[in-house]
Image (cartoon, rainbow, N blue to C red; front, side, top):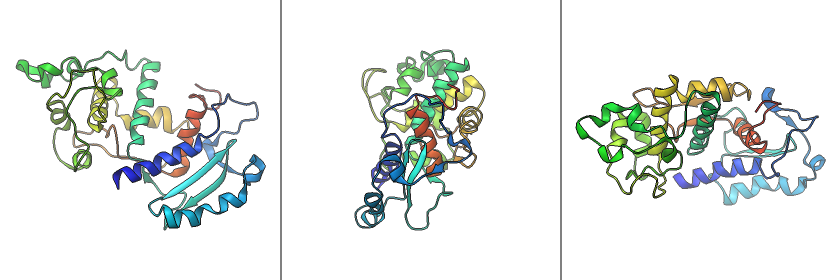
Length: 266
């Protein structure tokens, strides 16, 4: 079910970016104040085919919660299952990892993070006292962003869920995992890596991922309704637990579509 939900949410993102990457047009209308809607035929899409989607979803994709098609800056199709609607906040699951990556890029551009070679050990020295975790001293922000810390994290069971529910020092727990491979040498899907990013980000910048997103990403995009759960130490969950509406997810897709350019601002 976890993978299925992730797939559905990724489908939502992919649908918003089916168009080739485009430069800003002079007549571009940005959806910060809300999306425009338009009949699909005005953008060269077949309304009869789109009208078949709800029946198909009900039969073959009963777990699909929402589906949007954005074309040329307009919503041309929008469907919600069951009792979901345009204002519903959905858990975007591991799409959170992409938002975390965006925020790291913004912080680098703003000078709030100095480079990608920052080591976790230099930011959290208390976990490396008296030789503890010495084999992990070389783990950098770059390793964490590319899921190459080498830590033996498992996505199975309740590991991800526990980040937002258990009263523990999760930074200590994650960096204390055994080493499966030297840092930077092997890729391993890891919400643990992205949660370490959150801790490092907050220690260096002085603000949480949520607060940074509010200032530099959500507000400029007109995203006002959201949730981003944190662990018991106050660190936003770096790789999960961000909640957005489908329309606001599409705004992030639209930002990607324009290579990070939004209404004239990079």
